Structure formats: structure tokens, C-alpha cells
Length: 170
Image (spheres, helix red, strand yellow):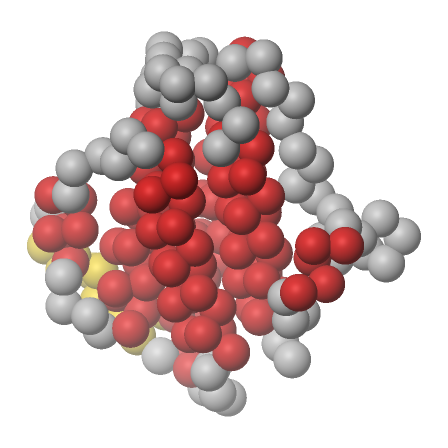
């Protein structure tokens, strides 16, 4: 398998692991003010989801474009976790179906300034980097909430691979 299957699997596993940690928060802690750009765990995790929805839509030719940003933020961590898992499954399926030449395929992203043509092989690393960046912020926010943040870097290596990571292809 090519690396993007592993990256999409890692992404799904890390989001599931983070979602399980967030589920342990007391009532109100999910939306409580926290340090970081999005000011709460709910804000940070909703941002991750909506950007995933935006790029997966562009990658799959879904036609929603910027309309994905019109959704209301989800304030229930369990519901948000389920929505994220669905988006992660779509991204993993997309990556598993990639064929030779697909990384050079051009897709259109709907930007405020108008449509922009991008290579699939450029959008995917950007999307994974975006996820990692904001999960790191959520990690700090969880710590601020008094919850021990989970290890999110135990996916690829045999040495410290989390048992739950075995459920994902790489």
C-alpha cells in the first residue's frame, strides 16, 4: 500500500483516540474556554472536522464547496466524534482507492476568491498536516481541562504501536 493509506489510517486512529479522551470530560468542559486559537476543545475539534469535510468534498467531487462551513458547531463530544469518524472513513476509503496517476489529478477547491486548481498529491499532505497541527492544540486543551492527553504518535512503529492501531491498514 502507498503511504497515504497509512496516513489516513493514522489520522482516523488518532482522531478516535482523541475522541475517547474527550468523552471523559465533565459536562461543560468540552465547550469551556481553553488556551488556543479556537478557544475551546469544541471549537478546535469542530474546526478539524469542517476542514476535513471541505477537503474530502473537494477530493471526491462532492460539489459542496464552501457550503460545508455553514454548519453549526457540534457541542456534544460524542456526536462530534461520530461525525469525525465518518469523515475519517471517507478519507481512508478515498486513499485506499487511489490509483497510479491519481496524485497528479487536479481537483478544484472553492475559495473565497474563487476556484483554485490543486493536485490531489498536494491536498492530501496538507490535510494530514492540518489534522496533526490542530490535534496538537487539542492535546494542550485537554491537559488544561485536567485530562491526561493520550499519546497520538504510537501508530507506525512496531516498537510502540498502540494495540488499537492494529485495527487500521497501513
